[in-house]
Length: 209
Image 1 (tube, rainbow, N blue to C red):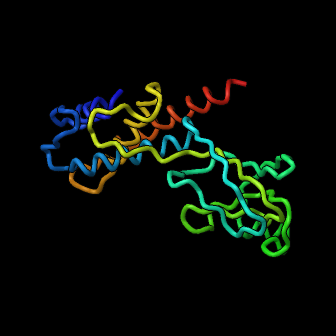
Image 2: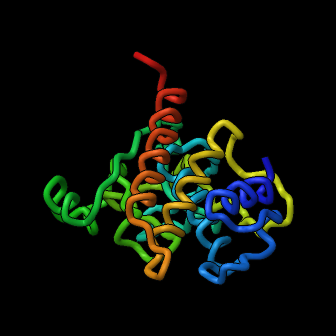
């Protein structure tokens, strides 16, 4: 399915003349506003479900206080610290407070990283907990920020089976907009339809056990 196909479906749902999302004659929504909602919905679905995951390896020097993330990083799926002897340590999510509780002085007392803090660091950087004692490699599985859709007839960056999730997440944003056609009831319905897609993705990726 292309972005124009999905925009046409959204126009039908909002009683706008269907033209691939090129125009919105009612004036309730602008084209840029709809595209913003569409791209936000795609990012939300990818982040919530981890349908599409990218992998990278980031070299890290001993004593490094931060590690630069890929420029297209959206969210972390999982991470592993690989030492020079190839020993691998899974990294759990952590923040400064958790680091202080588990490993007091972790910022200055270096060791083998066991945690990853991507919530309190500067944009597009991550910090290892504790600070690494020796050089190593951060193996990162992450959700990449997709190329923004512009209604140009390109394929959606999600499997077609989950396109309905993007549709309903977009409609929820548009129907919840404060204005003369705000419709909280329909927006809530769209949220529930999105949640069905999210649950289906989790079952498909995780299995039925």
